[in-house]
Length: 224
Image (tube, rainbow, N blue to C red; front, side):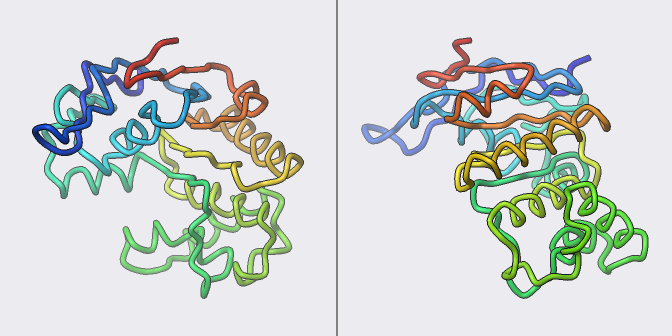
């Protein structure tokens, strides 16, 4: 069963003679529960595609439907609510809040949605951190964590609201090989155990090989 479909997706930056078309009628369907790698050279449109799929940017034209909702016609408020409930993000730079503990960083998305911290959120966050192998680091300030540990916190944060889709943009790009493979192993475990769909942009063929599907983007279109 499909989770999302984009059809004839076009994204153009600028106007007139300076216009740059980054996505050129891209078509893509993601099935529920897939763990897919997004591959392609720099400038191929991968990051732009992830940004649109995450409802952080509107396409110039084309359709973007997820869970039966046409996100190209949704209002900003509707997109924000949809994103908070259904989509998680992991970035190359973990973007943790430096004055927060590991647990506080993880539960932040739920605290924003609920307007406060709750006991249920703290239990969920602690459970996710334990699954990430960070049971002994739950109350550590994020500044005291290693790079690999910070990225595992970022993965836990992306999963906090139990999203159907997690978008990851070069999530292991700043990690050493051992830490990168550990993060991918944990992502794979979540994919298998919870059925969360992952779309992971990477230049690393070994990381891509850990995924069950490889999607190749070139010149603004899916080419393989």
